[in-house]
Amino acid sequence: MKDSSSQQSGYSRRLRVAALVLPALLIAAMLALDYFVIERLFPSGLSHLVTLVIGVAGVLAFSAAIFGQLSALQARDRANTQRLRVVAEELEQKRQQLQAVNAAGLALTSELDRDAVLQRVADEARRVAHAKYAALGVFDEQGVVETFTTTGISEEERALIGHLPRGLGLLGHLQAERKPLRLKDLHAHPASVGFPQNHPPMKSFLGTPIVLRGETLGNLYLTEKIDAAEFTEADAEALETLAAQAAIAIENARLYEQSERMSVEQERHRIRMDLHDGVMQSLYGVGLLLEDVADRVGEEPEYAKTQLGRAVDRLNAAIADLRGYVLGLRPVQASDQPLTESLSLLAEQARSNALIDVELDVSAEAAQRLDRSRREAAYYIAADALGNIARHARARRAEVRLRAEDATVILQITDDGVGFDASAGASGHGLHNMRQRAFAVGGTLDVSSHPGRGSQIRLQLPAESRRE
Image (cartoon, rainbow, N blue to C red; front, side, top):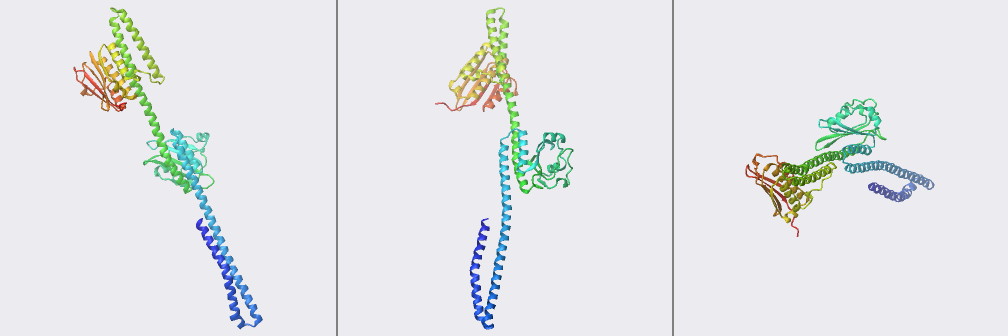
């Protein structure tokens, strides 16, 4: 527009100069012609008439030239104005489409539910390209249409149409070619196979694949351009941009679904481990206590009565823990206490339930250098290890030691029991749970044992910096 204005202003200056200079030149020429030529050729009265006629003719010719130039400039100005108007309208339409695509991309990032993302993509595509109908087909691993999301068609109309598209006709062509397709009349395309019964009439068509890292996730289809006979190149470009954004949004929704499934599975696994290391250990301790009561009830009835009371209390505590799991709550266990207290409680339970002499050596400094998750791992691993000793080792003595060593905290549990062949890769005795707990908090678990020579479990955990 700036160049056009400069051009018009240049023409105006030339016209102004011509309007001033040419008449003066014309008058001078007439005077010279009258003085040097006409007066010599014609009588005095006739020479002035001839001069006047020639002057009038010159003025008319000059005026015609000026008006002709002005008309040409005016016509050129109208043409330029029309071209600029068309360009401005195209730029405005492009700006609106880019703005709509940008808004659509931002809207898609706010959705994580897969069905909601698919519906949002179809809605935004229809809005961006000013289409009456839009659809989004997503394929499964075999390339079969898995879901077909529509917009612009009512639920009643879609129910009348029937089953999902099978990927034939134009839809199959677009899936096979994996290139954008823009048609003024979709029925004229060789791949077109028509529509099923009760399908709304459609003519103009625009489709593009949704591709991510070379994998076609689905296709995006638009039909029936509003207020135009066909979709434009700008529509196609906008749809391709939206399809690229849609691919990322669909993949994010897929990853979110996988993450949710993994979270559920991890929570189930955690509960499984916690039940094994918590409630199951408690129930096993109660079982040992009741076995002791059964052996001594005849000779020591008072002792048996006291032990039965302890067994009832522990059963009630186990029931409370199970109720907490059923309600989806993690029970408040000894793992929530400082290790100086919780490990002492575990040692006392092993002494009273399994009649094992447990020696305890817990460094308060080492206990303080573990965060909650590592403190919990240390507690459950110690509980599982002592439970294994009580069930399988037939040990008389055991040791539980916790100490700090440089930037780590070491938990070591040993016994003088029958041992087992650790080199055989034994997976029982709760070792699998122990190793997973250690790994989950960045620790390592080493098990050493030989038949007839007891066993040792060594847990090494990263420690927090020393507190001043």
